[in-house]
Image 1 (tube, rainbow, N blue to C red):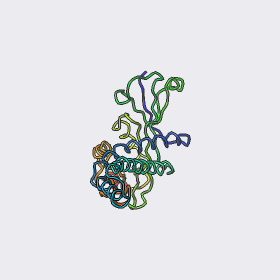
Image 2 (cartoon, helix red, strand yellow; image 1 turned 90 degrees about the vertical axis):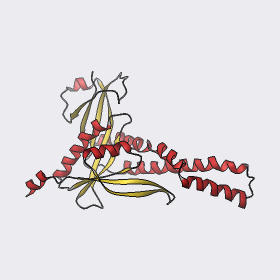
Image 3 (tube, helix red, strand yellow; image 1 turned 180 degrees about the vertical axis):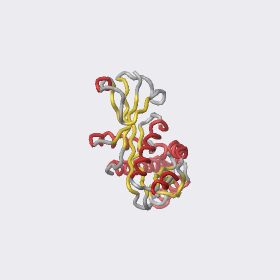
Image 4 (cartoon, rainbow, N blue to C red; image 1 turned 90 degrees about the horizontal axis):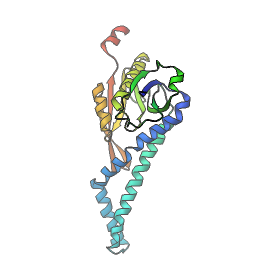
Amino acid sequence: MQPFIVIRNYREDDELKCQELVRDYIMSFSSKSFFVFCFREITLQFIVITWAIFFIFLGVPLLFCVLTIPGCIFFLFTSTYFSFYAKAVELMRLKPSQSLVAECYEPFIFRCAPNEASYQIFMDNVPYEEAYKNKFRRRIVATISAKNHNAVYNAAWIYRFAIAKNYPLQKIMEPMINLISKNCVNAGYASLECTISEWQENERDFYDDLGFVTRQIYHKQIIGSSLTVMKTQLTYNLRTDDTLQKQN
């Protein structure tokens, strides 16, 4: 039996699964962020300053000051982890609006990795009977939502963007983005906005292929102004020539 994925509208009973998916997706970038932060100049400065405080002001022997290195690294790890966790909780609490989910149907005995399997994609309507679908295990592997942007006039904002690990990003998210774009056009929005971090390299390539362009680049604080992460706001113009002609 070939696995398939159904892209459908969000239902209320999907909320817990979507929250878990969003949490796991956000937290998947925490480890990479931590290792990058370890080799930044500010981390070395923090270790040297801590070492100097213990040695000069507290009179700790120089040999024991070496213990400040793992202490600083542990502090950096916990700070990075909880900052990502706070962001995940923030997104989990946001109420979905114009939300879609991708529900994956896989055989109960399925030994193939998701990135190696071939999935059929269906939009809402599945050409299979319910008895046949009951032979598969169901799992929500992607979700996306859009709502009114608070800062950009007449624009929709993509949030709660998440996909399960190892599942094909392009194949699953592209039809979801296209459907979200159509819904936003019908709602009268002029553009579609999203924000990605410097760790989301695959997502950046994905948005570039869809035609998103950079609106602005800024740095968001992680630990005060010492540790920051580069964020990129992307925009996609929904007002095509055909849309303008219909409105006129």
